[in-house]
Each structure stands twice: as structure tokens, then as C-alpha cells.
Image 1: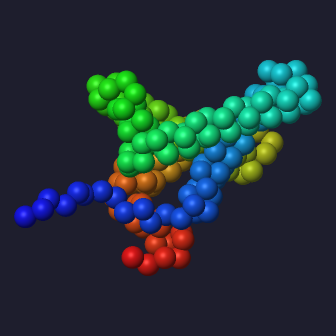
Image 2 (image 1 turned 90 degrees about the horizontal axis):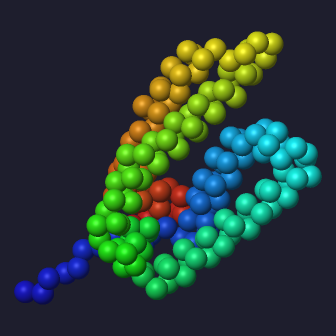
Length: 168
């Protein structure tokens, strides 16, 4: 009996994967940091230069990930790359750091930003009530906590079927 290798099927097309990544990068960063960019840079022109420099750095990181994906085509993303470069213990620590620190912090920041914008529209003449923002953010985090990062086996198939128009 021949043992069959178990792996994820590659069902997400290149245009749809690109749309997901662009949506994550632009959709999260553009709403969180424009005011702090302008305040810390001192002028609009300097902040635009910083946005362009940040975009170029992000492009170079994406190109590096592209090269790593060509060298190590197995599924697993950063974990797979780190496993091959620095070993399993560091890859494991990075995966746990993403699970327990980086991703929850990212989602909390997005939820707080979304509720700030929503409540600013509701209360334009006064500050956003902090208690209402925290409660609404907690509700948003609870609503979306079963998303891609926590259930990848279902979500990859779900996204590929509904996003690319392909049926498996």
C-alpha cells in the first residue's frame, strides 16, 4: 500500500489571492495611521514621501516572500520559510507569537478603529465615548473571531469556492 501525501489543494487563483492581500494591506493601514503620519512628519508632503517609502519597502518584502515561495513551495507561509532557514523551534515560536500576540492585536486595532469611525459619525460634535467604543469593538472581535486565521482548513476552501467562482 502506497502512503499518499496529505496537503492542501491549491484552489485560490492568483488574481483572487492578490485581491485578498491588497485588501488586507490597504484596507487596514489606510484608516489607522493617516493622521499620525501627518502629525509626526510635520507636513503633508513629508507624509506622502513616507507613504511612498513605506509602499516600496512593502513591495520589497512581498518580492522576498515571492522568492521564498518559489524556493519552498510547501504550504505554511512564514512557518515553512522559518522552518527551513532557522529551524523548527524558532518557526514554532513565531507561529505561536502570531497566534497569541500579533493577530489578536491586529484585530483589536482594526475593531477599535472601525468603532471610532462609526461613533465619530454618530457623535460628530463631541468625543467618541470610550466605553461604547470598547463594547462595540469587543462585539466585532467576537463576531469575527472564527475567521481565516483560526479555521484555515474550512476558510481556504470557502474563500476559493466563493471568491474565484470555481467549484471543487
